[in-house]
Length: 199
Image (cartoon, rainbow, N blue to C red; front, side, top):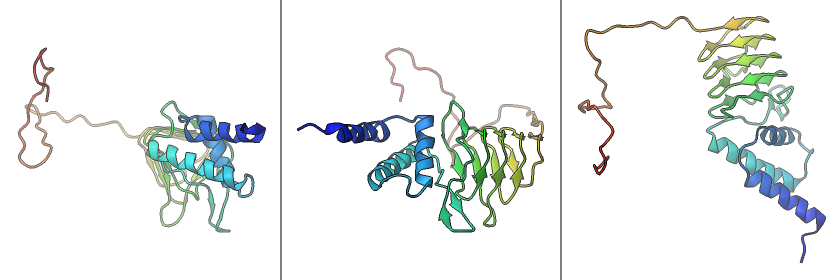
């Protein structure tokens, strides 16, 4: 018995969404649909939710659907789909109550989180570098640039750039020793010769 046109369409969606790899356009389309209650039927909602949860677990991301603190309802908190770098959503954490503007670039390992119950507001055309952390009820102005690994907990004006200070270089008289814990001895490793056990 054939699936029919509707059945084939459903199977195509299931195969692409459940079994497919991460795709930027698909991920944010699915999230947008989940943020708009009533925009999709129960079957598609279940399929979308499975895909969304699988992608976040696979890439260690935590990007819940949007949340309106005033009305206590699910909402879309992105003004438009963000531009994700080539590293994908790896390690990205975004609080549900955060508000993200248009044309925002979000790099891997970025955290946009709550502090004291409040979440940030990100303006339009903002670049957020790898590993940056943005916390609390602050506003990041339009066209701002947040450098890699910056920790931001106060308002950033429009057109501003945030960068870390210059790293310090600490010199030692001899090589530093590193230990994994306990009293393990530091061992220098090299590539094994052919036929040697490399364990």
